[in-house]
Image (cartoon, rainbow, N blue to C red):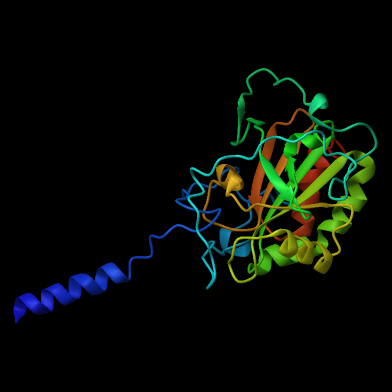
Length: 255
């Protein structure tokens, strides 16, 4: 009888193990890459005051192995397409700068952003190299079920419009649908239209290609890339003022 009870307890414990991976956010470390965005007083925002949602699979979520999913082929220059907003001046892979001293291609702070490809809302592959030549790149990765992602997506168009003259390109990448599923071209269009994203680019990630940019298990990830394509900041925040502060510094508006 004692052996039967012990066996039952072991089975119950195994069934409650939460260690399953999810699309676009598997096996993430607890180390915050770059920390939360600095508040006006220069202090980092407390983790529980920004996005505290760890990505979790919804009822219809498909979970490909994002860590081994192949990157899609880099397409020709996508500038000028419906989902390729651009500031004044040419954009495209031919304008990608050489890595500055001390920077190597990669996805961490201080790295020059390595090539990564997603899809636009027509299902066509779009490389982030399509936005080389911009004075600044704001990448925002959104899970459809995440309230912090919804909030940030709601003000992103206004921010991108305000900084367009300063050479900013903003890209909103849908990582999962509202029910936790793998996004499609249709869900990309719905996300874009719901939040009025016109000047901001809307893409989606159905291969887990953004996985490499994550340093923490939190959602609402913003990645800020300067004119040399160097990753200068990562943050999980839905605070518009904090995001504008980072853009002001990155674009040289405020020293």
